[in-house]
Image (tube, rainbow, N blue to C red; front, side, top):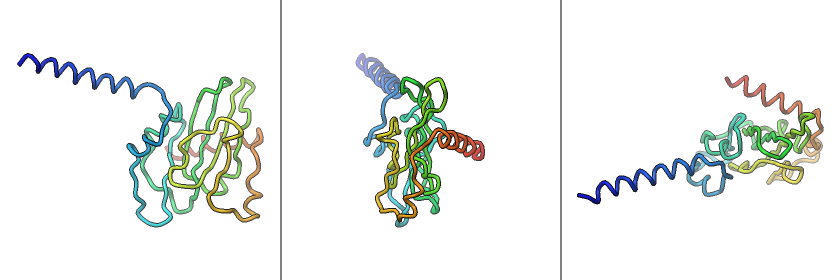
Length: 177
């Protein structure tokens, strides 16, 4: 009888410890995908992307991303990452995207205060696990070759492009509300 209260205290401590661990910021891993996003495709060619709107960081985006298949007219996963001058995340937005929406991949300054925006697109089931942080990973990655005419649609990002992308993601957010 005396061990029962000790077991209850240990169980409570274990539960509280798990809550604290879950509340701490950390990177999202492949293990998290398996635990949170188990998936079998309902038909050939279907895929999922992590999807969020202006999450505070990559972990929050991926953790709460809805487990939905992308529409048939999309083929890629798009990520927009806004950072402060120290490289810390201010906002992460991810969604399914068409080739047209993936035209600009790269990084550009967003404001005079050192903020930067990076965007990337990838092809494949939940391929947008990570966020672009610099020119080396703010890319368009495709598993299938693009036609030569399509490849001309993929210039690097300019400051004007970054502003256009930032405005369009905000319009997209507004239109979904």
